Figure 1 (cartoon, rainbow, N blue to C red):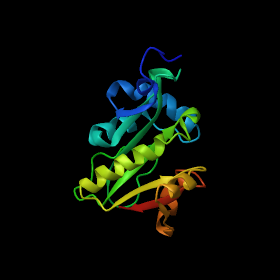
Figure 2 (figure 1 turned 135 degrees about the horizontal axis):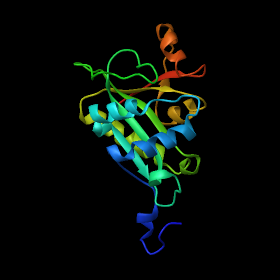
Figure 3 (figure 1 turned 90 degrees about the horizontal axis):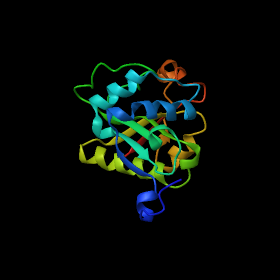
Length: 178
């Protein structure tokens, strides 16, 4: 139960930068949202280390979830085909061409309130300010509709078929021009 003595704004979910101490809670959210697409803790830790400005958590004082998180986003500069699921990058490309959204996961109770669109807009502004002209991602499950509402379009590239297979049969590579 949220503390009712706090102002209403302090009781609402809010995005903040991810810290190392959030990783256990991030994994707990990932297990709920993506039970068929597990990734190792090291994947999240590496991406946070390589691009902390692209990694955020949705802190929610009302959620009973571990760490009080209702969601997270992991993103970073990238070039070429999307990285395979559950794979360490080893480093960022010298000449990145896109800001890649590796994962945006919201617990069911956090969906529909605009939190997803808020962080996508924030990442788009960051990417634009850093000189990127696109955001890219792999949409999984039933998420392509959400991503289309955020300005993304599916890219049909047969050369990506093998890479996308690691994300599941419904995976779609999508790009948003900034």
